[in-house]
Length: 286
Image (cartoon, rainbow, N blue to C red):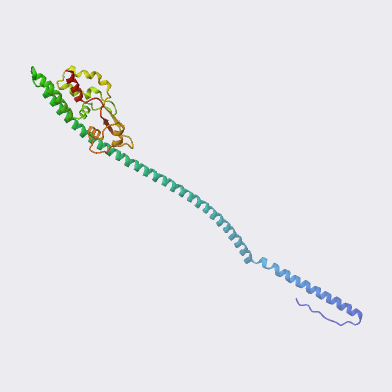
C-alpha cells in the first residue's frame, strides 16, 4: 500500500494540534494495516489442500491403528483358546496312552495265565495217564489173583495168608492216587472222595467177609479231599496247615518240585487206617 503523506509545517498553536492529530491517525492506520495483514496471513493456510489431505490421512491411520489393535486382541484371544484346546488334547492323549498301557498289561497277564493253565492241563493229563496205567496194572494183578483155582485145607489158609500180603505190596506200589483214577472225568475239584472208592482194592484180594466188618465204621474217618491254591500259598504252608508230610503231599499230587500256581487243586491224603492195618485186624480176629 502506497500512501503519500504531505507534511506541512503550520504556524502557531493550531499547527501543533493538527500535527499531533495527524500523527495519531497515521499510527492508527498503520496498526489497522498490520492487523489486517496478520489476519489474512493466518486464514490463508487453512484453505490449502495439502494440510487437509494430511489431516485426513492422520485420521485414516488412527482408524486403521484402532482396527489393527482390535484384530490383535481377537487374535490373542483365539490363540489362548487354541492353547487351551491343545492342553486338553494332550491330557486326553495321556489318558488314552495310560488306558492302552493298562490294556496291554492286562493282555500280557491274561496270556501268562493262559500259558500256565495250558501247562497245568498238560501236566494233569500226563498225571492222569500215569495214574490210569498204574490202576490198570493193579487191576490186572488183582484179576490174576482172583483167577487162581481154590484149594482145600492148608492151601486155602495159605492163600488167605498170602492174599493180604500181596494186597499190601500192590497197595504200596500204587499210591493213593489210584483212587483218583477211579473218579469220573467231570468230578469237581474241592469235593470229597467217598471212602468206598479208597478201600475198593481190599475187596478184590480174596479177604473173607468177616475181615471186612470194619467197613461199617469207615464213615468215622474223613474222606480224601482237595484244596485250592490261593495267592501267597506255598506247598510247605499247605502241608504245615493240614499236618501233612511235604514229601507225601508231593508224591500224592505227582509234583517233582515245590512249584504251584494260583487256582491249582492240591489233594490231601486221607487220615483213615491203611489197608495193612485192616488186614492185620482181620487176621487177629480169625
